[in-house]
Image (cartoon, rainbow, N blue to C red; front, side, top):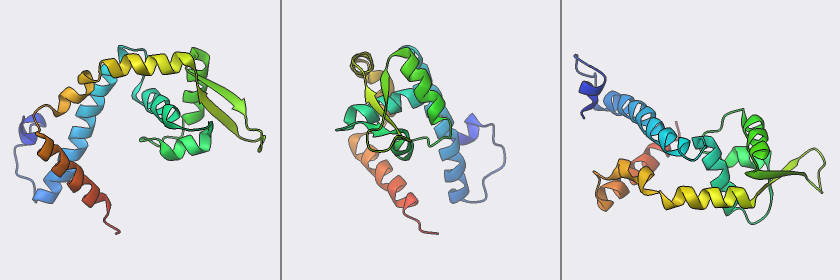
Length: 152
């Protein structure tokens, strides 16, 4: 669906750049809604899924401050989310041996099994890209990377 129809835009945008910005904001909300619906089936939020993926890829326990740096959505409520995930048994929290002020996070067996289950249904996430060819997806990735490389 064209952006203008989706947001009931009747006047033209001032420029293609303005349209692109609004399109990315609208698409972010659209994609986020699709992903949240998918993760809800597994009792997770998008942020929780992101945390599980980061911990799975870690070669050693990582602190909450390191986790915050690696998150896709760098919100300030990481400690609260981590506490909730620990209560649910997805992650273990341990006091850091080298710095008692830090908490190290480790993926539990339950967290790992949950990731495996979500990944079995990965098509539910990737379906949002079904209208793009592999080449188009690469072009989209390249353009988004180029946009973020703007130093101003």
